[in-house]
Length: 261
Length: 261
Image 1 (cartoon, rainbow over the protein chains, first blue to last red):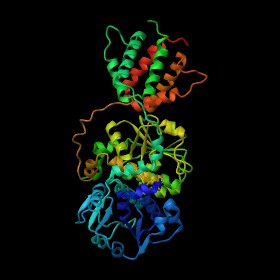
Image 2: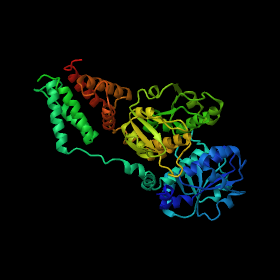
Image 3: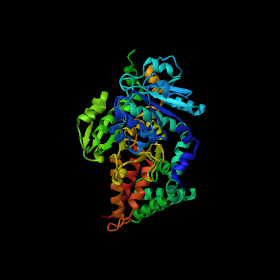
Image 4: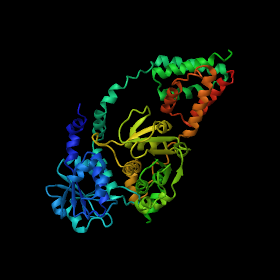
């Protein structure tokens, strides 16, 4: 089975591939490469660059790692207007809540909204130091922020792209997990079916354990206290497989033969 | 109102400040700085470096931006053992699901678990190219993965740190949002505190168990086989509380005194 097809066939991957990431006047070329990589790791590939200070560049190429295709296919334009052409949802991003006079949502809620609307969406990241200009913000329809430390909430630009793209993939968490499951299904199928003991077998083990602990002196026969209930609670929670239970019983038997009754 | 005090006073910020990020044999010093920045933007500050290839470095300093304090306070150690001392939950991270034979959760579910347990936690990131060695993975109690594109799921290491720290802040999404504008620590005091043993204590228990099982004859000293690994896997999965571990050790000691050495 072609693994990429598994993801590509999902509704989720189609959704992700239509979301455009727009970087405005990026100063450090390394950040452009790192953003491309961040996008691809989450299934996005549509990158627009508005007046990048340096592009293309060797540094961006290096930082893109396995996402050089995203970098090389990036569209370079000279205004945000051009970059958001054809988009109906346009999110300005910031690391904090702001009073932008726009509908505002944190990145998780924004991802949910984008998934629900399924219309052409752009997510816009401003220059590293200054953030987006008021003029550019006015071109956006919404504002998205990443919850962060109020003492220092300034994410690196590519890291912000990473969190936003991660939340877009996670907009359908079950699908996001499934995509991976499908991809790794070869590994998973080879996993042998795990067999769990019957409840009777567990109860027999507890009887066996209790007897041994009385014989060893750990539990006082006249005043047993709650030790057995507590141990039982632990073993129930751990839920040994049949193999593990056999081992535990074997270990117990090996001790028991040394204990005088 | 002083916003930083608002966050610092919340249970959430205290929780975040106890979580340790461990970077093993980081190759690119820039990634160390970027990881420090990623941590601080989400309210984390405890960084351990296991045998970094270059540290301290100018590049890390530059990439840390406003998180130079996190970088400068980083502890440098020479083994993962040292880095996780005192931690009871230790997560190995990867960008994919893996068959590590450890309890496995995606980063969002892991963050929920960490919030619920409120015990000392380390999150371990391997070297950029190779990931964690099997030996290092065995020191961990759990495995955490970041859902990603099955075609190319290799996040930059600092970007992975960013996503993990973001999810930790988001483990209480309402608080994360509120932390920025208002303090609200209702509901938090009612959380029950279960104490879990440190990893060190668990490893001591395993040593103790192994010795006893050799003395009892269950494990052949010359051909130990895999019994201990299997038992350890079960106990790691069951994750005894401190009280339960004390009981298990007491039970073991009660058997041991009957065994001839």
